Every structure is written in structure tokens, then in C-alpha cells.
Length: 165
Image 1: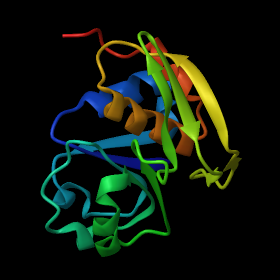
Image 2: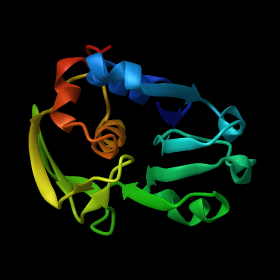
Image 3: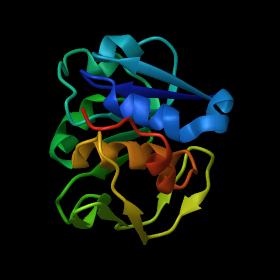
């Protein structure tokens, strides 16, 4: 079973990923948390740091194989035990970013190849997708990154995200 931690103050990214996984859910154990201490027990295959994550103290207690985090938080990742890190955000230096966002359509750009949690390679590419209501763009990037790192097409995010509040 693949253990995935999703660290953030609210559960928007967690819920989007859970809904997008659908029938794949039984092979993935999603673990929500609001603080690094919530992930201190056991090793995670993937830890997603959402855009609204706070409370970096205690980060060194987390052990994960792959870290997905906002590019702006990159320097803080040095305190974490991980094999690889993937950044997301609006900088051209981030691995996963937007190439465009217009109305109800979003274009995600995977700037370089990544290795998913099962060891598969996801090639550099762009994904043109409908942009569903309910997730801010940075949260959408985080959720799409989790799916890509699990070997799941990010287009599944459009199938189950919650409606706008």
C-alpha cells in the first residue's frame, strides 16, 4: 500500500486527491495532517506540502521517499529526510507549473521528467484540462502533482472536485 501524507490547514487538496483517485483509493492510503508531527510515525511514500501548510518546526521527524512542495518552500526541505523533491508553483524553475490559465481551462506544464512513487518515469509534457471550481490554482497544482507522482492522469481532478463555495 502506498502511504501519502497531505499536509495543510484545510482539506481541499486532500479531498480533491481522494475524489480523483476514486476506485484506485484502496491501494493508496491518504493521510491528512495540519502539522509535521502528524506524519512523524512510519515512512511515507509521498508527502505533499500544500500551499497553506504552516508550522515547519518538527519537520526533521518526517521520513518520506518523495516530497512535493511549493517552490517557494524549497530551502525548508533541507530539514526533511527524503530521497527526491518535486516543486510546484508559478516560477519557471518549478517542476510543475502553469503555462496558461484562462477562464475554465488550465494548462499544466511538467517542466522536466519525474519518477513516480512506483519507479515509473513521467515525461516532460503539458496537460490541457478543464479548470473545475472549488480549488485555487495553487491547490490544483498540488493535487495534480500528487496524482502525477502516483501515476494517475491529472485530468481526473475534473471528475470529483467539490463545487465552488
